[in-house]
Length: 319
Ligand SMILES: [Zn+2]
Image (cartoon, rainbow, N blue to C red; front, side, top):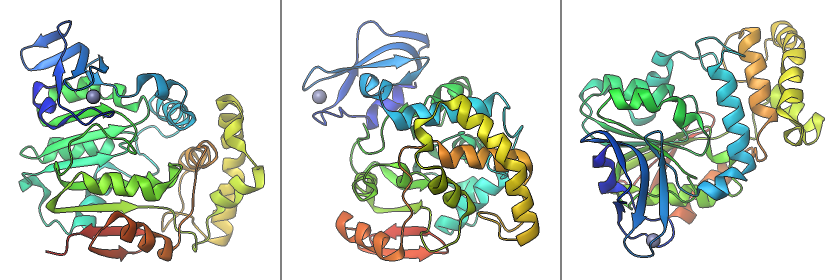
């Protein structure tokens, strides 16, 4: 982690400032490789592992969601599903969606603090950091996927990574100009609480965008998840084998009915297998109505929100 990141971090127990413990090892003067962060208030220590600060290390070990997504992103990185794209989308697709969400004309000129809550593969966080070199990108994720990006983050001075739960982020309130969270909140136990926490990270002039699964749009993967009962309780090997077994059947269904679940066109078998794995692995996978997102926004104290398509939500203070 870069020393600069310390400015925005805080303790997840008492919100006090953190400092570097004496045992830190630095690869150079700006980059801390290992050691720990310590809270000035309560003394709680948080380890820095492979250059990534890790919050709630003990709890994350036992967290079913963290484990499921660690398995998923490790499998993707090894090329066990798609070789390059992520859910059938390219780097440019991810940037385009980010720009669309915030109505950004030229992302190269951004100079803001942007938090991506739930980076998954890291495709957006990495590409944004590379192409918006004057912006500060902070990528957080509950899974081990952050570690696969740790060497990349060292090469990009504006990319910061944190392993943490978005429901209890170790980031000072009002830090961000933009918070972006796509396809993540519906995997938390209580998405309304998650949204409130993310909104607290946004400064007064800032904005937040989140995307969640709509409950009112047909989704073959969701039907499959429900049909299987509690597939997240099965081992990852069983879920992996089943994903590849069912992918050709799903491909045939999409091909014959033209009822694609997420994209406008037919996806490859690899992408469909990955989507099946993605849909049957998490413990929580809520599907949300427009009324529910409105209730969440009201609960979080968001003054102005606008629903964009199915089901993206842009939030601001309306100024
Ligand atoms: Zn503390």
